[in-house]
Image (cartoon, rainbow, N blue to C red; front, side, top):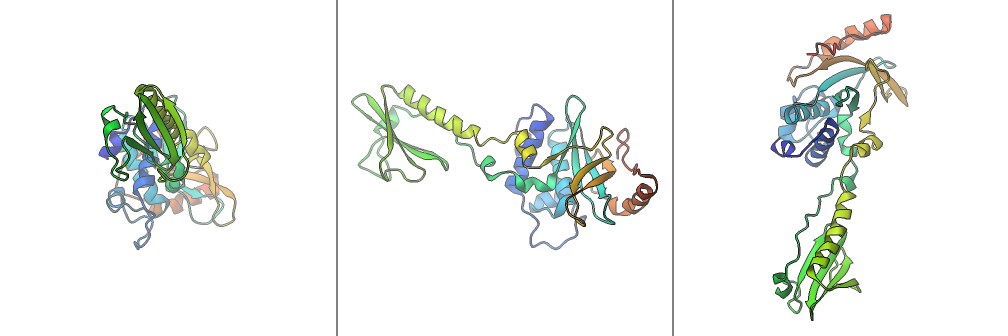
Length: 282
């Protein structure tokens, strides 16, 4: 939680990005742990770094979001599949500053693209002192090696007042013929390296739209926010999932199994399931 609180978020969308990133880095899928989908509260899942299904994933997402970013409104939602006799989906509703809302499909955290969770490369400028250092891996060379994760290795050396920057494939420094460029000052060398690293990092940053494209952000079917489209496990394709419960506070209590049957019957008879009162959520 300390790590998440240290990740800045100017708005709810940035907060959602941060929570998905943390879940993608830290959680497994619950493999090897025998339990039902409603058994573990969020704190147990977090302690074991494991989630089992949509309910546990939504509980974890909701707990992380509400605790780290309490100023941004969010609700934990229970829903049932209106086209199947059983089954549903737990998600988290998040509100934007303009009052509009979107759905975070917490269980899909594993779908955050690998390229977007790679560690950023921190740029440390090359110094004049380092130009006189002997390289551990090649004592016959002096200078500095700058490694950019999964991208390239740079060897920087100085001779006669000129600075040579040689670029090799990642983890292949001194192998083969490098791309080389010469500079007349170390400040220009550092500018060249920083531009490369900044461009690489920009391609690794996760944006809200990346989540949407990856299917982690869903929309409600209508303004009243009573349903949304999700996978139809019994018939294939997608089905209307009806929201039947919501809560605004993190809780170990889970009454979804108890209240769902009655609200399903109400929906079948009247076309509504009013278990979620957004004016007075649990």
